[in-house]
Length: 146
Image 1 (spheres, rainbow, N blue to C red):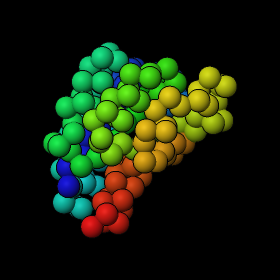
Image 2: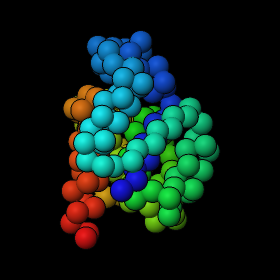
Image 3: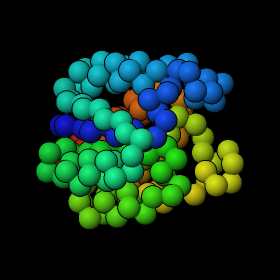
């Protein structure tokens, strides 16, 4: 199984940006943690981060056929990007939405996800572990399909 982790805007600042909200781990720390977990399950993982919506859209479009799952932390684009939603639907990729924080316990504008209806599921509020839980969800979903 092959999984693409896509990270949206400002996630490159993890570890220094509002650590009281987003934690002290860097994106590299999270990627290393996920790689270790993926290796134990014989899952190939690839990571990409961009602050540009169009680049994330392109990554989603190009993932179809190359990856079994896209695990997407679209960050702020979660709440605004119809383009990302349309890319998920149009490409037919199996996507899982993840967030470090519990978006439902935050500002009202963060409670609406534009991409949720295009995803097979959503995980939020577990900090860096949301990435591991997203990977576990993909593994279990994949097993259920076969």
